[in-house]
Image (cartoon, rainbow, N blue to C red; front, side):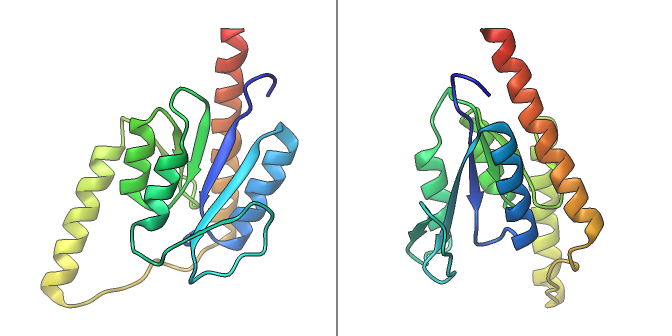
Length: 159
């Protein structure tokens, strides 16, 4: 990706290690830079890693603060709220399970999240996400590759 480098911002609190490995591999292949951000509660030994206060929204706010407006960026996150904010700044967003967030699907995802939270509060039952599968890992890698290819195509068209 010549000229205008693409940065991949990773919500490292919630990104599985295999997904982070895929980010690193694809970034190396495409010449992208990677910025990982987590709270101090998560230990990361990576060059350039950014640790923030353990406040529940600290990682989200740090990623949004660092997202350059008008420059190609990708955010890797499971957090629909962060994905919506990233889209609002013109970035792309991908979940570690391979969902490519877009203006077309983010409102529905946020609505479903709200409905599910209400149902959990009403029933008193809270389940975590299902276990990550090899299929999830493949979908993520394919989705990130697709997003990076779309960015490259757009950048080439604008040269």
